[in-house]
Length: 310
Length: 310
Picture (cartoon, rainbow over the protein chains, first blue to last red):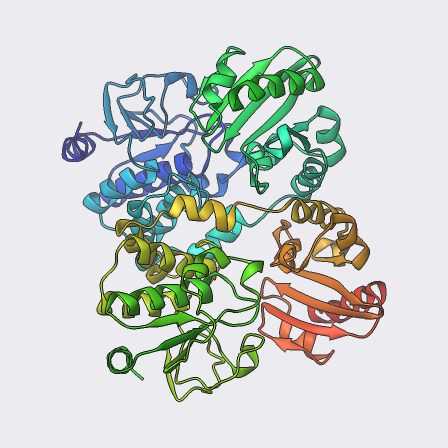
């Protein structure tokens, strides 16, 4: 679908129920809240599905828009959701419309507005909000949350000139970027910092320092008092080390069971490494699951990575 | 001076010697290199003074522009330098022109182009480069380094819509933002990560958790193998903790001698706290020097901060 066709669809319907994905992040929450706000501005009834995981991240942004008990949806919109497998816990129903930026989108909805080259779903929602009711400070704050999250506040490699231009426009429209950045990107729980301290001390080097392997065991999580919300993006931490070609984060998810994340600078192929263990992803970031302890997993990965350098 | 008067001055002179400040950062280096490149593009002779501290940060950006031995300057330009006290080691001479964004600029140069509301000196240099020769990919890379540094890649509270718009324009002109961000903001030495691990473990809480005090001793630096370049911006680390109103970083600079940095959320006045110890700064960020050990310094600071909450 085009933006204009989507606008037409939104204007012709009412009773909007907007759905965020499991493990909701700033892009899905900010996109959903901004769309909900804009639909209300043009006189529609619109609510967010009460994702039971809102409490783990930016639920305060979603809170004013959550559907009351007994709300009967007329039109369901999924935002930033690539597949039905990402539907939030407890949600039952079909998607009338999906608005997304994931290249892997499975076209599960009756209608799909997809821009796979966009760094955020928020940039697509921004175009809709501007056309529906224009940007004001409230919409700009919500869209800023959406636009900034997936690029880690414009620092990751997926940040484009368009992303920065959208952010500039939102600031001009009144987005409180300094305040929001502090909340979103510059605040950590004590448990998170204690966990990072342990991770930074756990690095093991291989292949003359070109590979670093880090582990997070259940004992480390317990010692730090860390919960699921405290371990977001930990896979990126060992990759901060200067001179490293390939970084691996091995997370113990149960006894004899671990989740592996591989990041590379492009010299080694992360997808190829993880595919050997039944996983996959992209050349510079991939993952797999291993049925063994963290120590054995580290040795398996190190051997597989060594072959990539040959 | 205005931008037009500055352009006129640059066009009328030749033999440019461009000076970066002590402890050079991305803003002074990127600004100097971009200006040097643009002056060469319009046929001028232009070089950077060989700041002996280039090696500590982004010297690779300055390297192609460093003046050879025996270069005789015709016109000297200081960039991102608020005062003569910030002249780099070994530099002797006067400043014909200063281009800066610090509100504290002391007007030490014969001519000054000052925009105190800009988040970076790079944004001012960008206007000059555009007028002199236009943006190409090389200029855009150098200006991106300058524009992104002082805002920590657009995350600090000084980031404005104008900063983001400048960054967007540089990306459209060919700046390799993803590659540069990785080098500038997402790469740490092993010593830095080991030091962070120790800092995260050193937090002491006061005033029901509203205050956190962290120390960096010489022993900690030695244990981590950390040098001056590894401790940039460490004062910001304790402020990452959720729920903290005031954060203090106490760095042992010698026996019975320490440097204190205070950051607040605006409830306590950092400037007032530090002024009691002969220091100063702003309401949300200030510093002072204490002639005592780190333990005694922590108690003095905690008592002073307690009075601020009353």
